[in-house]
Image (cartoon, rainbow, N blue to C red; front, top):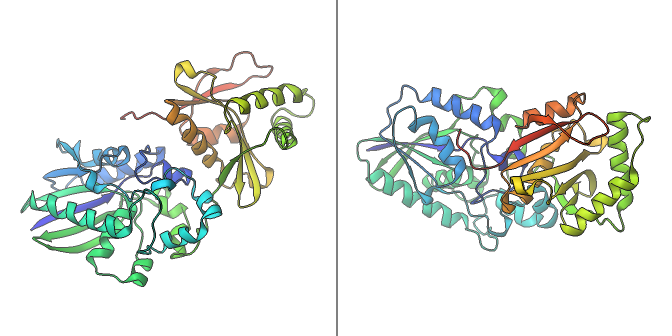
Length: 385
């Protein structure tokens, strides 16, 4: 008999930015590293003979909680990967809810008929996971091993092992990031000892404690998930100007002159070079914010520059702003950028706390500005800690 600890990866960008990451290779978040430390404490006194993970960064990084302290080698296995989400990969959940709600409902219900172009079905994922677990168990008879995988892949395997029907699959529980499921495998038989145990996580670092979507039991996602569309700078320039003016007055007050023409000219030039340079953040049909990117600035430093991040007054302090950072990552990472950079007023305490929470650090003062501004930077490259 082989004992297997099957562990979901720590909180990653898809969880934080509310984006669809199956085989997309996302990073672990700041909070995810705190979860990894808690997981390491949980397994400190548990003997493990071997550690395997999917070959994606978020699982390999999470596996360091066990293989590094125990002096083991990490083995990677693509059979432990998440559901391949096909054409949905790296799209915001809010976009799919807006454009493809019926298929999203089928996904949330673990419907066996769910499929998207280029992706896997739940049946395919279940078979892949079951074969992988059986193969790895057979390679370690009488031993205890740890396998690091992904939320939907683990959930699908659990459902398969329990022989659930469609309604039971729909109601099957979800696992928190770094939650542990224990299996005992003997030949073709696999028994679930316990599942989805996150008792090592204090509530303040639990991902599931902050999210509501998993409580919907297959209904439409209740969390506020944004989607993004390019702003038409020819026909909607007034939207951009008003947002810029509102942000300027809010930060600097009404007495400092607002350079409407200069801001508008720069934004229009950026949007001509890159259609996503000025982007509307949408909550359903409501404008919730704007994001402006400059794909040319600091490109020689492999930096993605963000000139403007804006949330409408009615959508501030609702935890939505981080999804705009996710949209910036989505554009810049395929361009080979390994850092994000932006400017922030040193006395804008709310914004400074926001950026610090999500990994931005001050690297100096911004040159050439008519008001004092800090330069803040965040790593988005695949670097081990």
